[in-house]
Image (cartoon, rainbow, N blue to C red; front, side, top):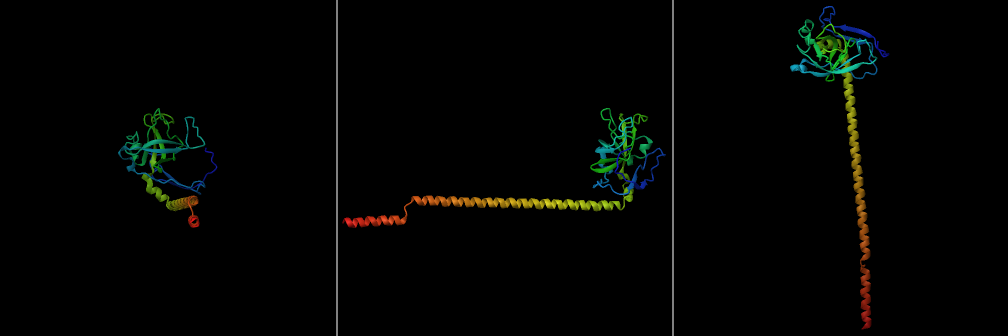
Length: 267
């Protein structure tokens, strides 16, 4: 049991019509739950994404799997969730047991992670069902079941040859969207508001940058003006100094006049 006080009651549960745990073939393993009210600290919601073309030519995507299930063979469950990164494929032969009836009939609605090896034993475990598989920052899958493709009787954690199958949400996209009618509109409105807020923040940042640039320009201009004034003052000082060393015009006149008078007197 998880020790989490912040919980919500489920008010609606929509199980896919194809889900039948008694049939021996796991299909339609998807349920949409509606909770009584949102969680206060959850501000952003992941979007459903992914399509078969993403896995063309046996391409593997690096995805994140998250769960709160069993941690070891002693059925130990921690208080916190864990996540692993693994390679995921989709296609008729993506799951190792692709010739087994329960895979052969449902491969189109499955995503299969790479099987565990002696060097990499991390995988989902009992209790992780319903956990998300996130690829390209979108919800691609929901954890469905695990199986041992070499020894079916060894369905335990931390062993080799264990492969996990996730429900490919893309296969049920129409059904999920039908159940989320009205909810998606709220998400869209929230996204528009978030985008608007982001845009306004960006505009504010741009304005602040422009203001800073203008301030820098004014500072540069003030500095230039001060430098010009300093240069003018220096030039004036130089002029004064040079004029002090030269003979003034009225002094020359007086001296000439004195010489003439002296000559007249001598004569």
